[in-house]
Image (cartoon, rainbow over all chains, first blue to last red; front, side, top):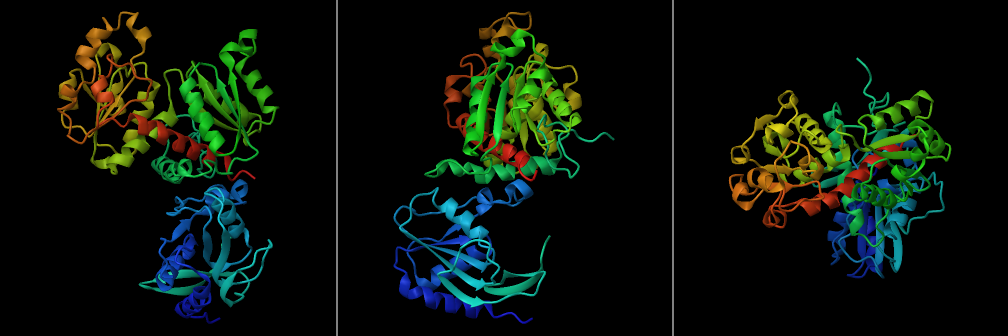
Length: 165
Length: 322
């Protein structure tokens, strides 16, 4: 199947978000694709707060089954979460479990005023009541595959991968 | 070759009993995993939910308030329930065997035992017993056994060294003090050699050195200034006061004169050398206050890093069992 151009989707996502953000809005990218997206959106939207990054490994619901991921990194929210408008940013929204983990982690930093969700792709298959606030496209990859964001030099690109067991 | 008793059949950490024979990639993984845990204490809520609903039993057959407290804090920051048993004042005094105690606590749905014991090998005995009886969902962490090992102390020292010096394969490291009686020294030596430290030195009076120390990969120095020349890292050991009562040492003053770390002796090390100490310190015996409180000491960061390293060990043990 042919995948849409990630740069076009990114421009579309930024256009949707632009009317809703203020200079004090902070973006929080989810590792790893969401972090790249949040950095690009941060520049496109001209926000004053630096973009944060979350690694939700400590909050995942499959820890008992799979253990801790090998490349867990520290989360970094370089702004005060208390009372702030936050937008979680991820490349692909699927089951909603990552977003659940991210919301739990966010609230351990403080009580934000509002949390929204921006994703490049909604691929369906939700297992939790989670919906994106901003979404560039809907797309269902063929069974047994997954869409991943990749960095191609300065540009972002989408790739189709075999689903890992 | 016998299977490493600390690793499961997938090569993952099942128990942490000693740094001896622990593969380099497992040590590195523990240190890497500790890094994100170090940030947890900086947040509004100093806790993550990984061990929510798990019961960690601190089994201290030998007193150690500090080590027990750091394990307790680490487990609590992982959201585990922590039960402290000070067994030196409890059932073994009534005649219960070690393994009966373990069976009783396992029957209370323990998920992890943190064990401190005066006898070398006690944590290994517990781990073996749990596996032989099919309870391999229960994990054992050695918090110090006899003169054998104190692996989390050794690992937090490795974390501290890596934090300040990055590359182990370029370092000169000196371990100073009562190496003969020190489980900390043994855990440090095994970890440092596994991580590839090319120049490892043991500095001590002859009466406080194990006879096979060179086989472990250390060069021996009986003169402190000679041994400290040009080192990047100085690892001090605690001098246990009871050693003074035997014939091993003349007096604390005498020991301080020759093996106490003073600014004057430290001056022959590299100017950016760091000084570690596992605590509690005997100021004026193995270390001078001017050094303990000086710019090269990283003794308090060691304590902070120790929590993150213990969190990492517990999180690596408890996950992936379902």
